[in-house]
Structures are given as C-alpha cells and as structure tokens.
Length: 341
Ligand code: DAH
Image 1 (cartoon, protein in one colour):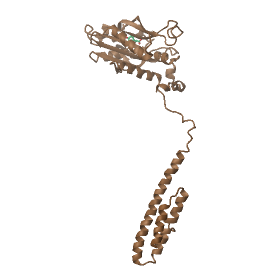
Image 2 (cartoon, rainbow, N blue to C red):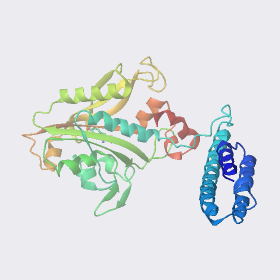
Image 3 (cartoon, rainbow, N blue to C red):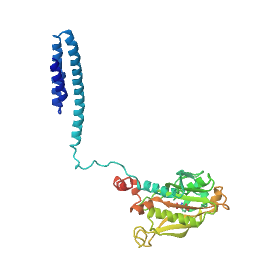
Image 4 (tube, rainbow, N blue to C red):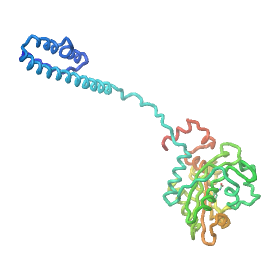
C-alpha cells in the first residue's frame, strides 16, 4: 500500500487541469466521497493498528495536499478566464460617448482675468448684488439727479431707503475702500443688472470686472501700463491699445479704452463700425470725492480704477454674435467650449 500511496502522490502533483471540466474530473477522481482517497481510507480498516496509524497519517497528508491543490487550481482557472475575456475586447469599436460637462465661456473668462491680475498683485474681492443707493451711486459721486439712477436703468427693489440690484461692480470698490486702509489693490467680478430690453446686443443681466488701486503717488502712467499688460495677456501680444478722453462721475480724468478690432485686424468691418477700433473698458483716476466718501485722505492718496463688461469680451474672443446665447443654456452652444475645460 505504501507504494500505492507514493504513486497517488505523484499523480496528484502532476495533474494540471486547464478547463473547468478537467478540474471537476480531478475533484471526482481524488477528493470526492467516491474518489481514490476515500476508497483507500476504507481499505485501511482491514489493516493492523500499526499500519493504520502510519499509512493513515500519510493518507491524511495526501488528502490535505489534494484539497489545497484543488482550491489553488480553482483560483488559477478563474483569473485566466477573466484575462481571456479581457483580451477579446474589440479595440476598433468607437469609444464611449464623453458625457463630461464643459466650462461656461463666462466662467472661463472670469478665471483667466483673475489669473492675469493675480500675477501683478491684485486680490479678488466680492460684493453684494443687492445694493443700497450709497454704494452703487452716492459714494461713487453720482449727482442726485443723474440719469443712471432713473427707473429706466435701475431695478429698484424698494424706495426709502433705496435698495436696488447693482448696475455695476464699481460698488465693490466703495465696499472695499471704506473697510480697508491703503494700499489697496483689488478686482471684483460678478453679475450686474440693468433695466434693458433683451436683444442680441443688450441684456438685463450681464457680468463686469472692476479693479482699483489706491496708494501714495499712484499715477495715470501706471494705469496705462497695467491696462496694456492686461490687454496683451488676454488678447495676445500684438494687440493695439488706445485711450480716449471720456467721462465717469467717479474718475477724473477718465478714459475709454479701445483695442484694434479683433474681427478685421483693424481694417474696418461692421463689428467695429468701420473704425478699426473696439471700445472695451472704462477707466480713470479715482475722483478725490470718492476717496473722501471712503474716509481716505485725497491729499495723501491717489488711485486708479477700471471696469469692463465680460460678455462683450467673450463675444470678441470666441466670435459669438448674440448675447442671449450666454444665458439660454443651449447644450449645442455650451458643448463648443470643450477646449477650455
Ligand atoms: N462702472 C462703469 C460702467 O458700468 C465702468 C467703469 C468705468 C468702471 C470707469 C470703472 C471706471 O471702475 O474707472 O459703465
């Protein structure tokens, strides 16, 4: 019987099932209740107690080995089957549809503007969209009878006290200047509201960025340099920038900033009304009255400010011809901005 056991051991070691059927054959042949090992256990009963002990021990070891081998082969077979399924994938099939969203062009522009100004030390600040008359108009040196305060332009929420939807982000300049000490160098980006009829060229809600710097000896030359840096960072190094005298109640002197038309490269087209220039931004030196309204001494400090509409810039950068597209959430429009995500 000893010899029989040695042969059995060898046979078990040699056995390498490669299919589930072969594995089942192994189980039936060796470890099932009707298998060789069970049969040998039965035969032990006829032997002497000495033989029973030695052969029984050996047979137990063989049985354990056969069971372990069976378990290991089950795992081995499962992993090879998985692998072979994986290799049967068809790589020539079209890839699954990309269901990721895209970044809205205005959000993308916002991030870009913040990045550009961050590099030269402007921090980003926020202000409320629901404002009082003082922060939106009064402190910004708008005379009491200024037409911008008119019901036609402004959405008033209540009167006495006058609470309104801010008509520009310049209101944030006041909020920051009255609560901080110079030097202050901040930009603010957000929604503004005006009572206008919605069309391809105007909307009752749009976005603005406003920036300002207050310190000792701030000059108009600095303003000009910061704006050229900003324009070339946004539109490219070759952009031409021009300043024209203008008027805003909160800046003196004031300027309107133009860039050469991006559509026709300054040649003249219907977008730039055949002038070759596009008006992009308002700016100027902060009026001393505004500084005083924020409890900053205008004999010690000066400052500059600038403001710009985001939709107009996005329209130029991405050649969008209708302002309404920004708020309609038409997926066919939004999907075109994949490259910016
Ligand atoms: N607030 C102005 C507007 O809505 C834009 C503007 C012009 C902002 C000049 C400024 C500035 O800060 O200095 O039309």
